Length: 103
Image (tube, rainbow, N blue to C red; front, side):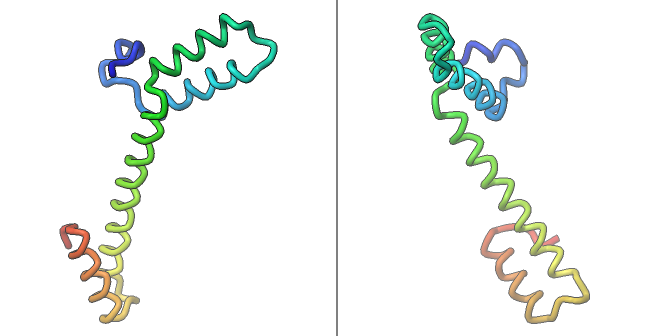
């Protein structure tokens, strides 16, 4: 679903930016001092920002980033002179299971 905010940046609005904007709108909804029209507008903006979709996108991004870090640590283990040959072999096996290149 296209967002009203996509026109602001040619690269598109990041999921993190959308989640941050949604936090503000959710605070508006919960604040008893805000008018009903402001709360209604906040509901509309949350829908326009994609509801919970930005959170799912951020979670997937974090999982991808974690896999990259894990692979980097395993690659470092295969080159570290302080790691035993057995440890290097296990790290290489895990890299192979991940499908990450060893070089």
